[in-house]
Amino acid sequence: MTKHRAIHLILAAACITAGWFFPQLLPLKDAGFVLLCFISALQTLLMFGVPALLLIRGFGLSATQAMRLYQKPSSLHTGLMMASAVSYTLVGSLLGAMVHAVLSSFGMKIPLPVAIVPKTLVDLLVATLTIGIITALCEELMFRMALPRLLGLKLGPGWTVAISSLAFAALHFNVIAFVPMLFFSLILFRVTEKRGSFLLAVIFHAMYNFSILMMNYADARPTLGMMGISLAVFVFTTRLLVREEQHEVDRSGM
Image 1 (cartoon, rainbow, N blue to C red):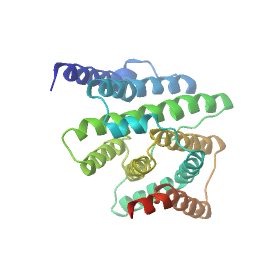
Image 2 (cartoon, rainbow, N blue to C red; image 1 turned 45 degrees about the vertical axis):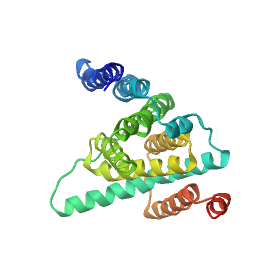
Image 3 (cartoon, rainbow, N blue to C red; image 1 turned 135 degrees about the vertical axis):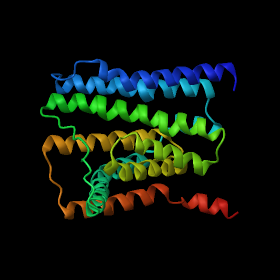
Image 4 (cartoon, helix red, strand yellow; image 1 turned 60 degrees about the vertical axis):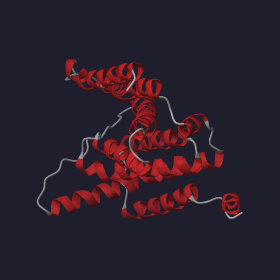
């Protein structure tokens, strides 16, 4: 490893460590919702955003990643990605509920993920900016760009995607959320590989976060019927996003 790369790797590790311990140094007992949102965004920047940029600067991007980073998605794919993200909000909840039911059947008592519940419109707007958009951008830079680049120096594409996805799911620190987040990550890798745009992953992630915030804000209680419809929408939109275009099939057969 070159000195340039080693320095950036050490700085990235230092930022991650600082982000991990940062909230523990603050008196958060009486902190309000808005302040907690900004603290969460700052922690995300320290743990994922800044380290991702340091790793990208130190190790660069592959030619494919660089092309994906700057490629603008079509309006059709953007719309499909947003619909897929909204529907996955309930699909992910269904997957989490299934995991919880299986674990409970073995007598395991697993705590549910802590819900982020905006109480006012201001809370919702702040949470959308911080937890919704900033978190989505930072995590996607780390787990869809920087970490795959780092792993890809030693591992093949399959192992790179698998390890990056496992890390993404594990860092949500909840057993019930692990399966939905693992599937979430694998979907984004597949779609960005197929459509060639990193921005689609950010849109999906941000829209998913926003949908959860909206559901919590509205105190929505989805029914099984709504979950079934969401599953159908998710499968339909995702299949459209990853299917072969006709001109791609024709070109591959020439």
